[in-house]
Length: 522
Ligand SMILES: *Cc1c(COP(=O)(O)O)cnc(C)c1O
Image 1 (cartoon, rainbow, N blue to C red):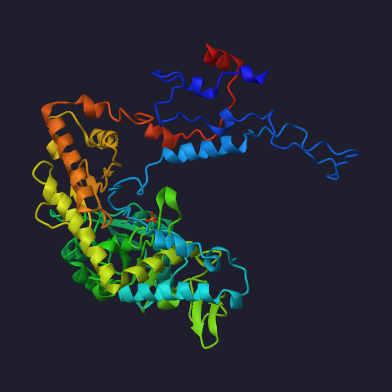
Image 2 (image 1 turned 45 degrees about the horizontal axis):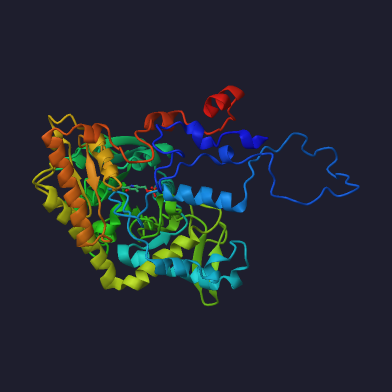
């Protein structure tokens, strides 16, 4: 009887050009709850005779109401959903500040080795010596690459690494008996910087940027003078979120140190200077590294992040638990304050971090070698500057006098008078089969468009990307406004209510009532 119900795609009511509502391989996909039926069960065991529940009356009385599907139906549901996702494995993913680079398949093969993939964090330490060695070695490489004293491997994302570094700074200040409350953050900073400082109870004070998009040592000194004896730290990104190298960075570090503060560097953009510059040489005290950006481990929908935090000698004693220590008898885990030789600020995570990401990042380091890593940074910067050079005559640069590092920042000026905004431009890129660049970030640039191609892209792939963007610019200037305001025209869904989705997400599915069902059947 339930077979009379219309298939739920009928209820989606798109303007249907085909009987099914599908458009060739673009297949409409309802929710699992809409295609599954609670009445159907995949279990064909018979009720046992003489069945007496032993749950003391606690057994479920109501229907479970879980949708049931056959295995092929369930499989198809998830495969279709996966095909609706854009991925770095499908095309260029030029999302500035996010470093969407290719994750070599060698990394995947290594991460799936049973000695890494099938171990448990509570296994006896003697049975996981190889895994501990890998974490320790990966950390040692990070210290060498950054020129820093030690590393906390456990933070699980960039923002988590920031928290780790700032907690070390807080602990170091406490050990000095100082209650400094002010953290300086430049205006162009990633939102996680002020958020981290605020979460730890610091007062965030903004440092204005120069005309050219960078932070002047003089500006830092001025802000510090207004907060004498109160500055705990500065949080600075280098290269900054405008893709520019902070030229005053050494002077800024010295000024902050002289004032008794620490220098936190947001290392999310380390991929631009990997093998070229060691942050330790610039006077950095703490810096998180996004393994999921610089060291190619998948992120976003593709996997979890990992944000190891490197520390200077001054902050090293305050690294969090758990720690891995190399001893004569092998690797040991330091899990408690008592077992630690220093003064850890506490426990950062339940276990030891993202094992699978350590394996992938380490495989990337080993397969590239020192020269290969340096070349990756050089190629990332070259690719960004190639895109810049090929587009600078038709798009507008807010900072034309500085060379770009690994990402190039455009603003909205070139669209003036066309009736097309940055958002429309980005949506039109979807119709061309590209993931848009980062838009409206950094906030300091009006209508920002931040493009980061990474070293993964070939010349041919960049040429196609650039050609498509040039075509869009000409279309906008020609007055072909609909191509933008109507975009995306060819995506399974058009413009979504992004604000509504963020502010009032609908996370619960409710079964349609009889009226809605009847309406759908018409
Ligand atoms: C990505 C990024 C972060 C945060 O890293 P997550 O892993 O997303 O938490 C912080 N700062 C900058 C500049 C970034 O690009």
